[in-house]
Length: 112
Ligand SMILES: [Zn+2]
Image (cartoon, rainbow, N blue to C red; front, side, top):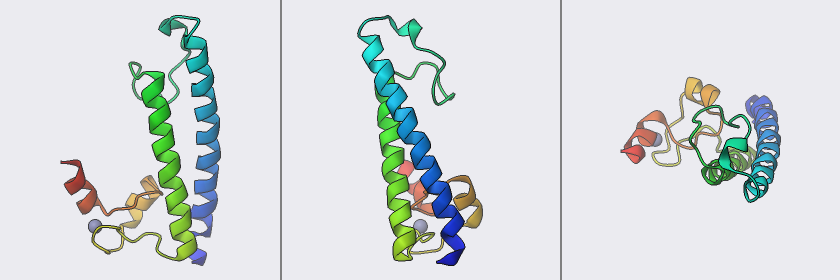
């Protein structure tokens, strides 16, 4: 699986970032016990300002899990194959979301 070597490195980088993010979130949660929510400094994901630290933490944990699974799929040689239908996941999708475990089609089905 030479092709995915750089993806793996990428994923490990992402994992490290997330670990850091998670640490910050956990710190912020601790601070929240003493301060009010407005002391919560700039949103960590940059997505939604209303997200509570709890959901941020969950999000980060879910993402970490997905990335770890993707790394193990690379190691097993099943990376890039949809877990639901067994078809290859499109390259653009993998570029956007390197830890995708499903093709666009199946991911849509699961969402709805
Ligand atoms: Zn699929």
